[in-house]
Image (cartoon, rainbow over all chains, first blue to last red; front, side, top):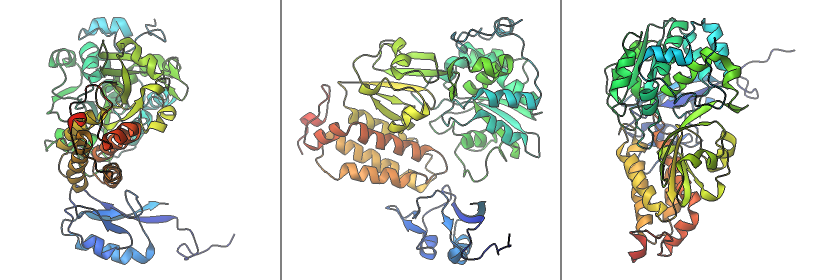
Length: 86
Length: 401
């Protein structure tokens, strides 16, 4: 069986990157929503809402840089990214 | 010598109180089990957590057994749910069985500490007497609806405010004193004490193959004999309620304020995951609250939602803001405000807060609201037409829009 590159775009990834929101920290500053408009919306009260409905939304590869910015720029350090088996 | 109670006898409630000799005479001596043997027995028994989540007990035990450091074992006796008193009754009548569960686990896991945490709902006398001369630290903590959430309990035991924390790091990895921490409801511990003594096959002689054993239920509301009973898992709702003698039931709230309604027409349903799923209900902590046909379900639900909103730990934005919004909209519906968008708006808000908090409070509150709208759909429609079908309604009938 030929060995195929792990991250080839046609290949199902073995590991997915997810974004975790610590709701006890989040104050709804909104920089994550601006950086990740395809992944996060905003609710009636100004807090982020994962558009996928997932508790910890999957971060697609194309959004990983923006997600890293969001993690770094969150003024209350409420975000983190982690890898999980898909 | 075996002193195993017969399959259908009350396993938990016929305890010997705080007298240890009488306890040993009733149940036999507590065996010392190696971790592998205890884990196998608990796994084979199919025991699930009796504190609300219904998670397999063996999975939790295994999680702390794999930790690098010696774990802490915690008995959760914080019974913050106002409709529940089964933990208080159990700790009053059978404290040694709960302590047995803690002790057998602590020994098998070579735990650093075993702690029994009790809230203000627990009568201190019997459990204090029983815990004397047993290798368990008894800790009394402040109560509140969310204080029994696993992470809130761990924070409380670590000397911090007893509020839920972000669950990203599980307490089974790092909890009390940063050690792997096993938190089990006190009833779950009592069940483990029975499994340790009599084995998985005996445990399975009550209940159903995929939901074995017995459970404690707290029955309240429109019944002539409220109180705590022990019933087989998978009993029909009508059979579980029968000893309490329901009076003119319209619906039963299963699982408490974080639970869901089952209409009185469906009381033949069994108390199993599968048969309660159509109602989004689960056995949870075993609360069965009967609503009578004369009380307005929207009045009652609005008051419950007020309470839930007040019990928010006020840490997480969606819960802090969304729960009062739902309480306010339910009240508007209850008093007969004829705004046809109210049900949709309530459903939207319930979906919006779900999954967006550090603990189960927003999800459970949303489940209750969604269930109220679904089960009492006809009642909601009547209110929107300016009338209330309930005989004792104090609000909608007299309110003009």
